[in-house]
Amino acid sequence: MDLQGHAGPIIECSTCHTGDLGVTLDGPHGMHPVGDTRFSAGGHEKLAEKNKDACRACHGKNGEGSVLSRVATDRTLTKDEHGNKTIHLAKGELVTCNLCHKNKL
Image (cartoon, rainbow, N blue to C red; front, side):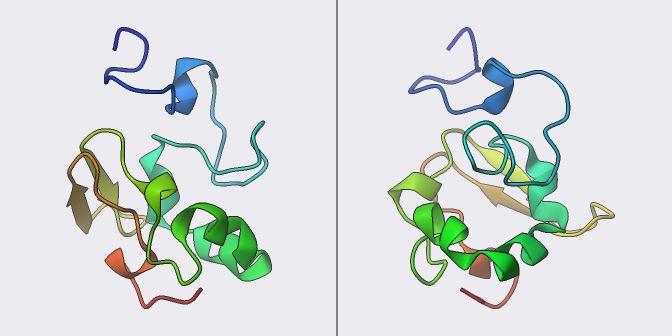
């Protein structure tokens, strides 16, 4: 709770890592930054097109979500690069592809 602002396993990248990890899958654990909601604002589609299995590992075979894509705390995701459209997720909800666009996995 003291380190990341919510109870449970350490999941927030900023708990251990500093700086901008970017919209990439090149992080130290081979996944996108958790807790950095810029990832939802765009750019991740090109990553998904190149390696759909990387997305499927956590977000499910068809992007429908899995236990690994549950949010650990309430989050607000931005759907576009201008911050005009947002989605609010409560703790425990699944992050799925169809929250923002057609399911392409």
